[in-house]
Image (cartoon, rainbow, N blue to C red; front, side, top):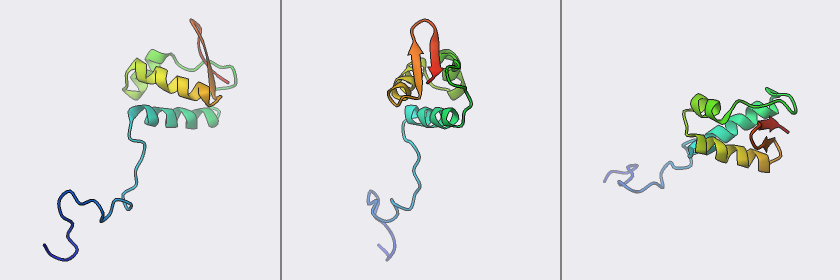
Length: 89
């Protein structure tokens, strides 16, 4: 092997040079909704789109959106009222 080449399977060379975003779909959706909420896209107590609408918008399953909304509720950004929806906190 020549100098400067990295053997297959050897990831020491440039792993830190590659910028990495969220790896899982729910992390990507959570990051975007977090950004939109903190940018005041929705007013306090305003309803967010439905789980189905968010799933369609982000091209993920409704269970992924539900997971994201639980995370954001845990962060105090939203609150979910059963049978009514999710609202900006």
